[in-house]
Length: 157
Image (cartoon, rainbow, N blue to C red; front, side):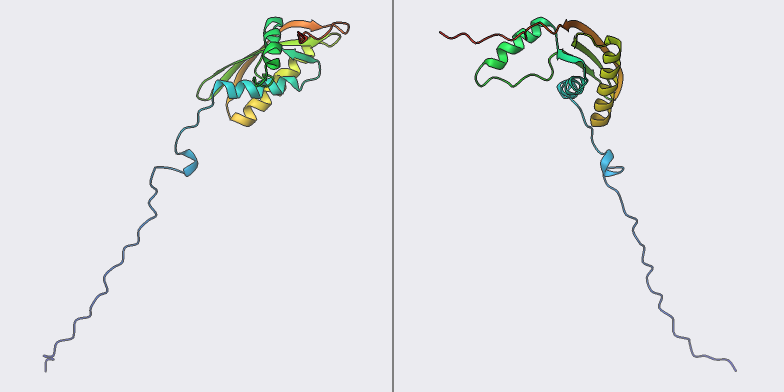
């Protein structure tokens, strides 16, 4: 005898497709966009790092220091320029620096230059992530112990 009753159809549950997390914008959030660093930012970092080295008396040539002293005395003028004596060329991933320094009399110029390079490279690379390809140092003067500071005295009228 044959069974003529039909078996009820088993309803199949609809298959649920899970969505993979879709990242919009392509990539990790930290890689989205571009960061640019101005030459002046690198110059400030390098100028401060160079001034921290023992044996560096001042930055810049005599003329730039004289103009800076005048500018510093103007009421409401800019504060002491930390970029004086520093020139940076900044690319997308690398930078090159030129520094002009005045050293104290009696110090080893080669040792001071080496220490300035190490300090500047370390500070710039740590703070900006840029690769410092070169730090050129020009020693423009030696500060003698008996020399007075090259600051202009204010004139009283």
